[in-house]
Length: 236
Length: 290
Ligand SMILES: Nc1ncnc2c1ncn2[C@@H]1O[C@H](COP(=O)(O)OP(=O)(O)OP(=O)(O)O)[C@@H](O)[C@H]1O
Ligand SMILES: [Mg+2]
Image (tube, rainbow over all chains, first blue to last red; front, side, top):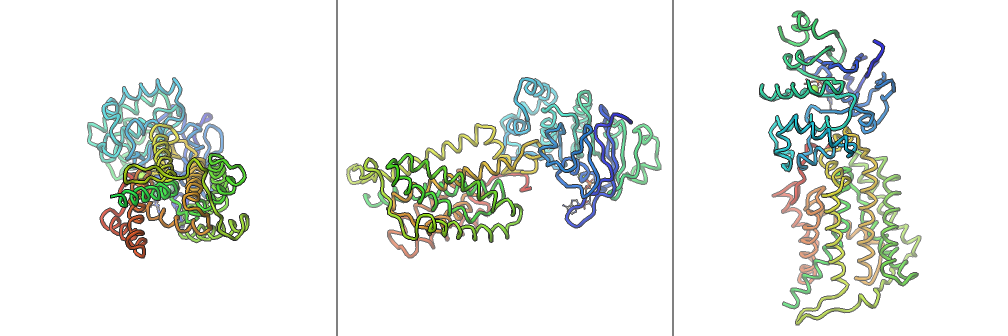
């Protein structure tokens, strides 16, 4: 693969004294949705946090658009063009929906405003609750807000951590549709336990186990591979 | 009635001065998660710089301005030298800022001499207005007006500007603010400097009112400000205003009737709030304090 957008090489991450990620290898091609799979506690969230600089890699390198971003602070990494939708959604509870969106806007130019309108067409509910505090939204609405906020900037890469968590099937469908639309504009790394969602959206997959990348390949291959799915994902 | 109103005005004026210290403290606490026991030192420094500048310029406005500038500079230095190395460690913060508080007090004596300084106000702010039975001391009215105006300005900045929005978001979830591309450290420094300047301005306003500036005033008012932050709710500016007025008033009345109990009543007020609303009167809702 010659044109790689994001590349993790030999990434090791410690949280306090615990060695969480062991030589994680991970590559993302532009325009694709790469799904990160693995059991609870496998290290998926830690991998995304390490990319964002929220956890520091003790060694190894993260390369984004050909540039080493391993040691950069999180805000700098975000400015390079990475949007982040964390597992806990990261909504500011005391700010209104509109204010939550505005904090996330790195620029307030016309292009951003245009994107904002596009985002609000994707998530019309947000417009309805524009003045409502983020803390008063339902779980699904919070997830939409968190995703919408990451769409407002012109990012080259989105990191989305388990967007289907705790959502009703109808809402999951909506989230899938929104990511499908976003896929046309940007590259996505998706952490997902919901295999239905993962297989609907994913082009390629990586499986993490015990902080190590144990498998990767085309999503179409994984769909057929019952053995792999049983072994690492607990599904058959 | 006359006495009651006079005590009330006095209490509100004291409350406003405490508010000027507490509002910076509450934002530093809420946004940076830093326990800054040196904050009162800025109050004392503001008082001395104000008195010194007034002596030279004979201009009240310039003396206030000098205190604000001194507060900004001292805030910058304090953040860089004292606070930055101890982010995320409360025990170290308490120790180093308490130590620095003493350093600030001693430095006052080095720079301005070991004695109490007499502070005077300009003639146009001296004296009082009579409204029937009630005497309103002009200078106290000025303190109240300045305090209220600053409160409104701070609230407007927090509410209507992008930087204010970022500060409010930072109080709720620092990590997410950074992940959205904002250099929170710059915001920290800015808030620290402005908070320090407000405390210094408070001190500069206080000295002409009491007639003196003394190094220990920083510690006295600093303790009140901490109590106010706890009562009002960490990170809440309106909370610190309400709590500062409560503390100012209760302290003012108690000091008149049972002066020995003045501090005790303030403490009791804090305990009552802690029992019924452990997060203070005005809770700032957030995801976490990451
Ligand atoms: N703050 C922390 N302190 C100590 N250990 C942690 C911390 N955060 C995560 N871990 C450990 O790191 C490992 C990986 O956690 P991580 O959150 O990355 O897993 P995950 O794959 O995202 O799991 P899930 O599917 O449950 O979200 C786990 O064993 C977890 O216990
Ligand atoms: Mg996770």
